[in-house]
Image (cartoon, rainbow over all chains, first blue to last red; front, side, top):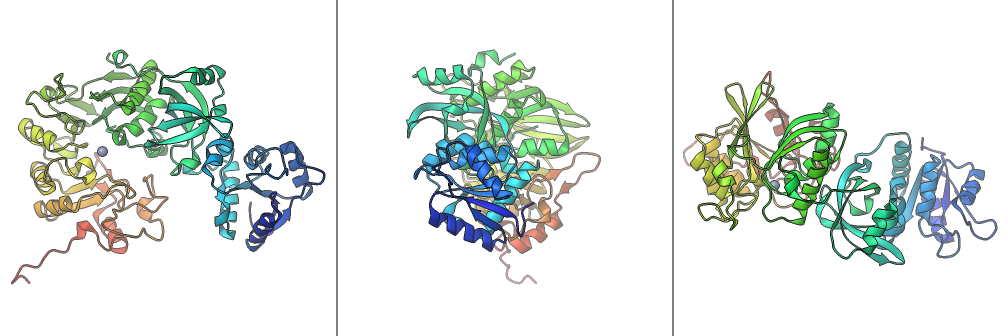
Length: 237
Length: 307
Ligand SMILES: [Zn+2]
């Protein structure tokens, strides 16, 4: 439960930003502790997690870009995802750059219920974000976070800041707006290699996607499988 | 099941009601705003879907191919498909004590010529080919679901169907402008044909400017005491959304979370009693509070001498 006095750890590599976030958390009635690297930078999420455990915090506010200044060698998204799997509620702060949304954040979006644009951060949003994550961890999934098996039409693959990405249309979500995601989300290596090698498009796959969400940045993908070729001849029975 | 828009509203509704088996699915025409939800249903192995009837999209768009791929996967799990939905096939379907009757397209109209035109030389679009389905309870024509039928389709319906009367009409094309036809004429002839006392517009607040004010006004002229219900709150009727979520939308209604609903999900009961929910009074109360410029409450111009 998130409430007055809940201890919350603030993870941000920019001291000023960390102070701001901690101030907002305090205004929200929470008890914040700013996490600072003790020696060098955090090289694996577990090291940071251990550091947070020493503060006895039961929730976390975490910046996405942790590696720009050598604070950690992983992203905030990866860390928030690790926290989720440890059942610790967290809010991920980003600057809403679409590149982050489509690549490093999308990669872990399934485990990130609360993503907040840091420029909109206020006490109500901090509490709301932590509660949203907490309630998902307790099994209450918000309508926009439920995933469904759906067809995903891949229109092509490319590189975006050294990440292989796919552009896709999910007609059960929005038939006209393309969504970008990292190819790494496709676990099946054969499917991935087939996508990288081909020059004819589209390719159709099935995946589980939260098609009840409104904004493309909220979409997450998991469990990719091949889908049948769209050949009508087989349908008529 | 007849049509299902994109998003997960349909599946949420089914799971809310504990429905896992659907005997027959009719897809009125090949537009994603009508097959998106059906596509999600057919992709979910937890649901057993018996038979799907539809008219294929002769344009072979990538969107249609998406749906074909989904249908093939469902076929492998045992769902059967009929690539014709017309007054000839399946024509009629029994569902419990109710009966579905496909009024349009006629079988003759459903048979495309190679030029993509009707035998009469008119250009075929999915909307012209849209199915119109009537639901009967015993001897009462309860509900008419008109897909996205346009003027070409309506003319065909007038020419071929003996009558198309129904107590409730789900208005075609979400109350948007019928292609190359006067909206008033279109609405008038449809209302003359159907004569419904409840007209439902399935609309989204965020998209398009539906329903068209001329259509609403023509309906009010044709059947003055008609109850008009839009699923979501049109921007024509209210520039602001309600402050709070209304109790009118307690079940599964698309847009309820975003406070975008007007009537929300309209539930028309077929048996044992003929009613619908939300009731006219509950809906009017909501409109009075939240829709200051409601199209359906157009104040009539007083005629001289009247009291
Ligand atoms: Zn439509």
